Amino acid sequence: MKVELDNVTLGYSSLSGEVFAGTSIKPGIWRHKIAVTNSFITCVIQKWEGYTEVIASGDDQWEITVKKLPKKN
Image 1 (tube, rainbow, N blue to C red):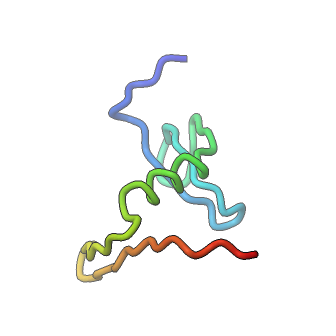
Image 2 (image 1 turned 60 degrees about the vertical axis):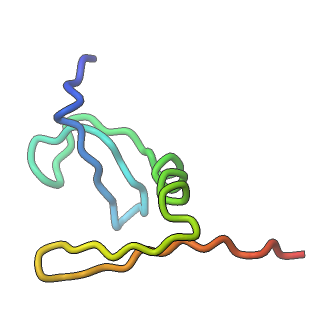
């Protein structure tokens, strides 16, 4: 299967809790998808570990922080 990378989007399923990458026919209707939750989480940790960033989406603002917790004994 050949996919144009410009057409790949990310999506989140509130039902399964999975993050998907793929192509869609329209929002919420996937043509092709693959679960990428673990890769997505790894990227979030790599980008924001020990760092806080405020991002805006429309009139809303969000704060993203990733903090490593001590290991439990």
